Length: 306
Image (tube, rainbow, N blue to C red; front, side, top):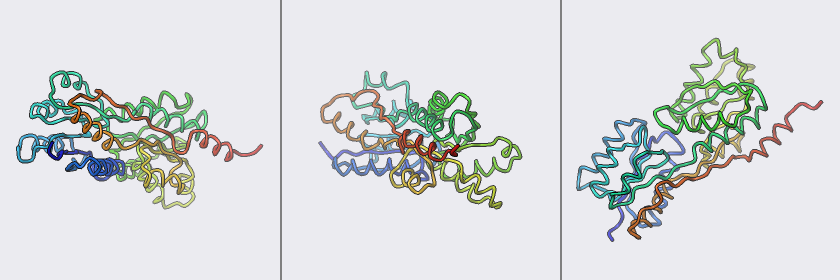
């Protein structure tokens, strides 16, 4: 078999988790002896489909496999075009409803590798309970609704956060700048002082650190210090960013969601070698960092002694 040629399409370069996805892809390519090309869509679903189509339609550029983390929908028509051209198709971190049908007729591997986003949300809801207690108000930075990822994480969080905890939702796009601007805009509203926010929870670490940067820029020192005393949490838990920010005390906690592209490439290579289809859907479990027990102990230690 000739050297495996793989195209990896990711969401954005302005996100540590996406860069970790890229790093896992490169490490897998070295192990497998594969040629890999990584492209970024700049958080633009139309651009992503155009980029991928250009590789499918040009025989000189055509890869053996495409691994795509969608900006928007699961790109059903692009998937059919790829498989029709004899290109293996792998969706990363997003559920789709067409894999079963495509697998029935495909002569190449077609499958999904996804983080358990509902479990990520559930852990974050449990972190809210551990850090805030049974009641209070959480400022919640959610990813873009164009993808199911944000909705599923929110659903998980709402199912496990304490019943009396109120949630105020703001929107971001997974980048630090979006977290920063969401908080800056919200702080400019007079109503922001009336909510008595007890913590800030974000659907990824980049938005969380962006939110913290907005608080750090508050001119009034007393107000700034009050905001910065609040627990700020994120998700993704990349070792050199999210987990490191927790160790530094810049974030209170994160949810570790391992990068998936490297695992997907190994599944792909095994399937190609065996001439078989992998399972339609491989789910990777998340974990709390620090553990929920550690967070509960920290809150207990911080509670005023009677």
